Length: 305
Image 1 (cartoon, rainbow, N blue to C red):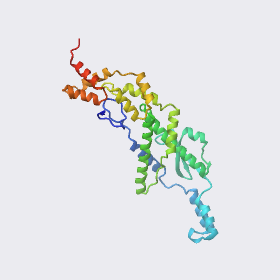
Image 2 (spheres, one colour):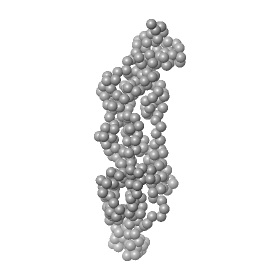
Image 3 (cartoon, rainbow, N blue to C red):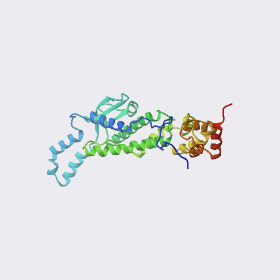
Image 4 (cartoon, rainbow, N blue to C red):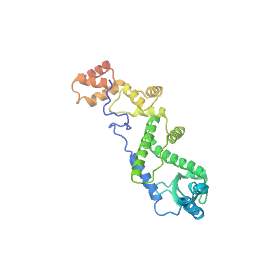
């Protein structure tokens, strides 16, 4: 059985140590929660729904005082406004490329500058409930895409790695909202599956995600000084969701000689495994053939000419 020393499927670092990248996903979620609270703090003016409720009470009386057909009219007037008004637009505090949109005095959502221009938004504009839902989805897509793009460009990633990253964010958002519910705070928008798919498709379309390029990068850089077997490379690429044919093409394009890789491992592990038999066993567990490992260990004793 192939022994994977200090390797975990979620291992995302290609260097010698095998440590994970220093990417704090928790702080991203907390920053977003704090930003929403900061923007919606204070005592904003009454919303359109509040004003409509007061108008309904002046016309019909309070909710407890109306009944029958009149009660239906009261509910229709107070439950769903015909539109919302954009009352303020401000530049993002932490990201100047985003625009904060306020509806009827309350912070509602944010868009990046390009999205704001594309939607043609401006102060005083009326937004229907249907369009508001569309804008909020665009907002969630824009924020998630930007966060994911920053993560992707930190180094090449496979499509599966990126999907896993997005799923982790989705789970963390659910956990954060459960905590906010206990604290009686307004929940953040959930990360929906279709938004995750749209982000992945956009990253592939823009060529920020490419499993072929990722496989070539991985084969060329994985354990350069320590050494690695072809078998282990194939297995790790498969764990990262890379198609078998793509992995084979990358390993053919960027060959790593098995003898050289074993020589690296022998030099690194000789002190830990002074006994030849144990050293051969280690090499076999790392994916090298028994006979090749035996010959390599024996050759390591021969003096250089």
